Amino acid sequence: MDGRIETTPKALPAAPRLRQAARHFARNEDGSLIVFGMVLFVLMIMIGGIAVDVMRYEQRRVALQQTIDRSVLAAAALNQSLDPEAVVNDYFDKADLLPHLKSVVVREGLNFRNVEAAAGSDLRTFFMHMVGIPELAVDTLSQAEQRIGNVEIALVLDISGSMNSNNRATNMKAAAKDFIDTVLGNDVEGRISISIVPYNGQVNLGPVLRAKFNATPTNGAANVDCVDLPASVYTTLTLSRTLQLPMTAHADTFSTTTQGTSYTAIQGHTVDASGTRTNVWCPPEATNIVRVMSNNRTQLKAQIDALKVVGATSINAGMRWGLMLLDPAMRPMINELIASGHVNPGFGGRPFDWTDDEAMKVIVLMTDGEHFAEERVNLAYKSGDSPIYYSSADNAFAIEHTTGRPSGVSNNNRFWYPARSSGSGEWTSLRTGYVKQTWPQVWARARLSWVAWQLYARALGTSSSTRTNQYNTAMNNFRTLTPIGTMDTQLDTMCNLAKNRGVLIYGIAFEAPSNGKKVIEKCASTIAHYYDATGLEIRSAFRSIAANISQLRLTQ
Image 1 (cartoon, rainbow, N blue to C red):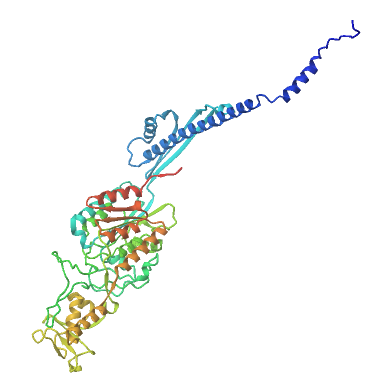
Image 2 (image 1 turned 180 degrees about the horizontal axis):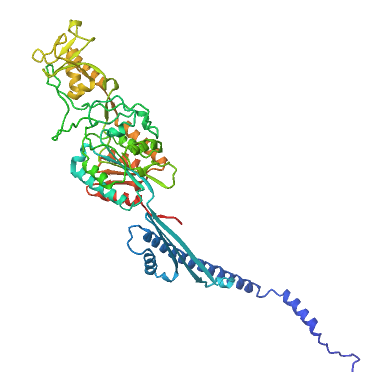
């Protein structure tokens, strides 16, 4: 032995060893990234899985919603002859979704059908159950209704002479009658009123409606109940019943005349083969008058059939009077027409307020042309005595010129007789048998251009140039022209006033020229409410409009 004492290390107790191992583990960084990466991986799988579940949910929801929307729309149609609930079931069956249809509720009345359906599905989740969501509830609800409510319609129809071409009048009449049958066919409660506003160069109000306005002076002609609207009425929504509206003169302002130094026999109104005066702004046709608020299909269609196409085109006037019949300010007038037996008593209280949610106001504006510059006889030449005299024995006119006579013509010989002296004309005193005429009497026999040339130009002009000047002066005194651009603007203003009040405007350009198409398309509520039709397409246009008026609406 070398004197050293050998000792053997004693093992530490268990608790200290555990503490020592824990301290070592805490200091050891080996493998830490692997653990963190595994945690991130699990989170990514969960998030991606949740996205998958959400997409599956949305796919199921969209399929259910689209199917339920289509099914209730089809089932709610009033012209649907099948059982509404069966229609909904069939839609779901075709889409392989019938097990998910929960309920169908149908409510029907005399003038409506309401269909409500509910569908639902419990979608088991693939990943969201990991966070405690084992399934997702997919529930959809839809309701559709078709209801014939309070509807006021103004059919504003072009009956100008060009409608004689290509069977346009025939096709338009068939289409308009079909429209009347379609719209009124399901109106068992009588809640739809239709007014007809035929227009050509003017709108013939008819004697009853014309009497409701301050239409003076009268023109002395039967069935000529048009008025010359002042420019101011195209800037306001309401057409005043107290505003003076001069009646349209029954005069041929358009036809030309033979211009020469000798006499030409009296040239009167231009007429067509049937004897209708064509070159007047308000043709005397008793069938072409405005029909105010009716739901009598027989009556309405008979009037459509009786329309006679003749004259020029003033779309602005047609629109002005069509909007008037929808204006609630005209309610007192409608009540007066009801009291006199000219309007159905069931239409009391119409036109409805602009803001009435239960009422729909519609204008169907149709033309085959474009604006034609309007000609109006000036107020001074509409009524009262003229300086013109007529002899029935001579069938000739004379005129008194108190001033402006050629030199050498005395005041005693101030009467000009264009037919005397073998047609050279003669200044002399008033002859026996010549009777003073009113302006309406003059225009009943002679066109404006003939009067301007024979009684003014030949009388007061002493050379070719002075006769032309005298003629132009007389024509300008007799009449005023409204430019086409002004008429286009007036129409546009009326259309905007109507649309701003919620009026639904359907526009039909029926084989119309480019400018006619342009103004009608601009007037329509939207491009979807504009129809460019040719031939028999006009019938499809009217049918489409009729269907749209009673269109289906998703209400939930």
